[in-house]
Every structure is written in structure tokens, then in C-alpha cells.
Image (tube, each protein chain N blue to C red):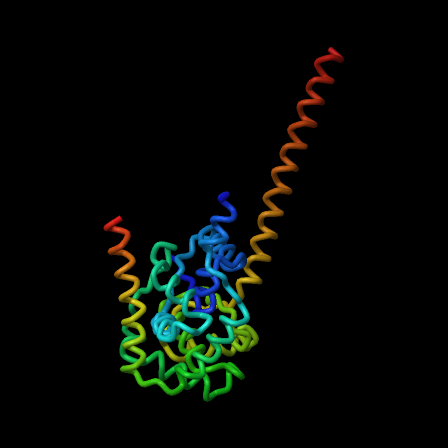
Length: 193
Length: 59
């Protein structure tokens, strides 16, 4: 089973019916990924529901109610439960590997790697701009992970999905054209006989 | 009312920039929360998850 972790902004965008978030879920299903949310994401969803006046409140409620029906899981992990992931996230922040990021964003990434996620889907610019190789090296040093993690934005993934769809369409057109040529040449051959 | 207008009415309005700005503020607030407070937030979100499952079963 391959895992992909989703961040809070992504879940809210999915709750709001945003195109790139929905396309990302399609992409994950097409590539046999199981989408998950980590503990920090659940905590943040709960926090955003406290004040009904904030603009994220409705989306947070919809996301909390429905993420399971959207095929997203919230598995537990011992390294997250005992606070080890939190310590490693703070270490990554101290090392300056994710400039301009908040600790909770680093926590989401470390938690995702604790779950052996191959993909981390986020809208967070500091995470998307962070040096991927150095981050992965830091995660490997922590001893919590067995796979390297790629950080991608839903925009990147929907572009990728569009490319894949174009490729499929091109193949279908090519096969149709090939069959038409074969059929015509057979007919020409038969009339010539 | 046709299906499209019905869908538009039931679909929540999502202002991406406002929502993401709120998440940004929430990220900053999380720097000051204790472990217990964070557990309580997770409890709120999980309660909704369980309740929505109950609603589905009742329906």
C-alpha cells in the first residue's frame, strides 16, 4: 500500500469543491495511493471549528465530517503519539531547512514521513520551496522513515493529470487512425484483386 | 430550480485566499498551544467524524 499525506489547506480546498484538489484525489486513486491525514491536520481542523465567524469554519466542519467518506484515512502512529515526530520537526526548523515555515507545517511533514508516505500534498509555499534532498536526508537521519517523500502542490498534480489525459487521448486517436488505415488498405487490396 | 442552480445553492462558498489566510493565522496560533489543548482540538474534529457516521447510519 502506498500512502500520500494531505495538509489542512488541501482538505479545506477539497471541502470547498476546488478543481485542483479534486483532480489530486483522482490522480492519487489512479496511481494506487491511499490518501491520509496526520494528527496535526486533525488538530488544526478542530481548532478552525472553534470560531464560527472565521472564513475557514464551514470548510473545516465539512472536511471533519466527510473526509472518511472521501476515502481519506487518519491512521495513528506511535512516533506521532509519543511526541518523537514533534521533536524531529523542531530539529528540522532549528536547522533552517524550511525557511519561513511554521512548526506545525514541519510537524505535518515529519508525521507524513513517519507514516512512510511517498507524497506530501500541500499548498504551503515554504514547504514547496524547501530543498527536497536536504529535507529527506534530515528525515532519514531521524531514523523514523523508510521511504523518501516528495512534496507536491495540487497545481503540479493537476498539470500532471492533464498531461496523462492528453497522452491517453493521443494514444486512442493514434490507434483509431491506425485501424482506419489498415481497413482502407485491406479494402484497396481486395478491390485490386 | 434546475440542478445546476440547486448545486450552486447547496455548495458552500469557498474563498480560497480568505480560507488560506485563516490557516496561516492558525499556524501562528499553534506555536502557543499546549499538547493538551491540541488533543482537545483533535477530539472536536474526531467527534464530528463519528457523529457524521452516526447520521449516515440513521439515514
